[in-house]
Image 1: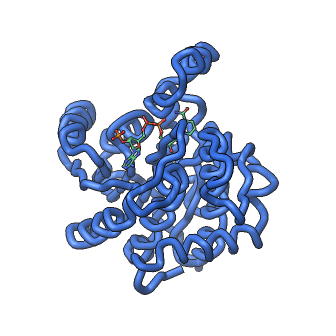
Image 2: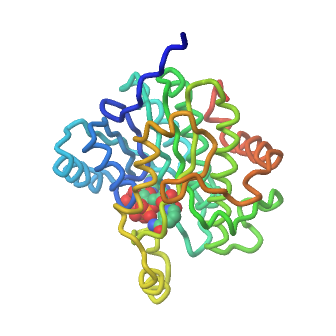
Length: 292
Ligand SMILES: NC(=O)c1ccc[n+]([C@@H]2O[C@H](COP(=O)([O-])OP(=O)(O)OC[C@H]3O[C@@H](n4cnc5c(N)ncnc54)[C@H](OP(=O)(O)O)[C@@H]3O)[C@@H](O)[C@H]2O)c1
């Protein structure tokens, strides 16, 4: 007789969340901590991180909360984060790649890479790669990458991935979010039968700091047309982290807690493989024995 798998529960699970110092990431951390998860989050501003830790502990009544410093625009900093994490913890059950930004003007990361591409996409790619051994060891485990409905407007142009020719902040954001969907679907294909799932979350239009670079009139317009709270925006991430029903689901795009068809381009397997190989080129100095 086939042995039944134990039901997935978040209680006692070790969760790493990037960008939980505000918005959707913070709301996700608070809710998962309330449900008994061990929460580790990343922060680039340690003072802010300390205040947020107090808030998470107070609201969840869970003391098992810690943060690690990480500047996600630096590949070196991501590598250090992964090393420190592995030194301190022997398991990782849920990795939530949540951090993201939108930049009106073209900026470069510490590694000289266009900032939106670097933080929104490449950071997810590298961190996941560096933690994959631990995720596999801890299986059943989950990777969850936060993208956006705006990935539908994205286009992967391999001749100009970093928008060197015609930068546009929205375009950079759309493209980075499409890259996340392509990457996660490819990751799920590579992780088949490992016990590690990989899915994508769209939070919905939520009133958070991500719109800080927008002109105030546009910001007001966005918020006027029914933006939800960060807590509501966190629901899809929380569902993907907690639900037993998604235990065997991988490579899917979730919006409002439900599997939803992503853009046609995001199903292009050849494009996903090509993006993967280029991403490896970007981060190869920081990965030793890539496990995927
Ligand atoms: N809000 C929406 O309507 C919406 C819609 C669709 C998708 N999303 C996605 O949801 C995710 C969370 O965004 P949010 O709306 O909650 O925005 P947010 O409030 O601005 O939170 C973004 C988080 O990412 C961190 N972060 C940004 N750049 C970083 C860097 N270089 N290094 C380290 N950490 C960095 C921020 O840290 P600091 O606190 O230090 O700034 C913050 O913790 C993002 O991936 C976003 O694209 C949001």
